[in-house]
Image: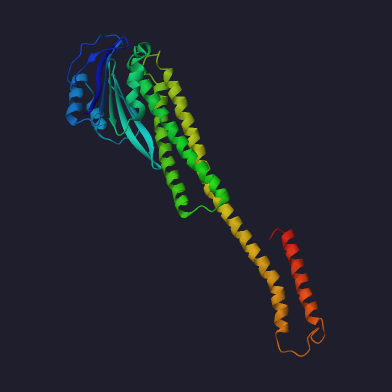
Length: 322
């Protein structure tokens, strides 16, 4: 069933269900309108709507495609808006498309992919007939607002993962899988950033432009949507910088730990070289060696080795090599 809902509203109240090919006698004011929602519709269903509501053929052809970047077009007295929904699935942002046909007395949404919380929007608006009675332009604002609100949880979930990786990088080296995940998340955020930029451009046009289906009373509502998009954009920009910082910070810590290990090994090698060198001399078949024929010669030599080793140990400890 591709038709999710199709109703005629008047004065903010649901009046009755309508068919896709039904020509409804609408009043010439802005109080009565048809709101039709479809999900992955067939070509025949879209053609029926095109005939009934006079939709532009270019917009109908575009609505059939499941993938399209956000955009805004005006065809005669009709506004055609394309938005992108998004949800996070296993570290990947899965996108959907929602095309919105907005006329003076009709609003038609064509969804491809998951619409998320859009399914509950109609019920929430029907509870407030005063808001729904503002007309199709307010419904358009509500749909855009709901889609943009869905972006914030995606950012928050990715942010939690980035902060967790940042914390782990302080305690241990990041493995190959975690580094690969950093680059994958950066790729997803970069694409998400492009989507936000296109959505921001659409909303700015609605805020600044003059369109046949947007009233002066409802137009200020789109400022709130623009603020939400800008907020998510700035947070994504900061998260991209955090991802780069995590990788750079991890590389610096790894270099630091490697340097510390190298210094520690060099210090112990220098300490152990002293007894090895002295013992090497006494292991040779030389007749004349210091303390060779004295009763406590070996004790003195051993004490000298330990004293030099202790001196080197304290010096390296002071230099923080050990």
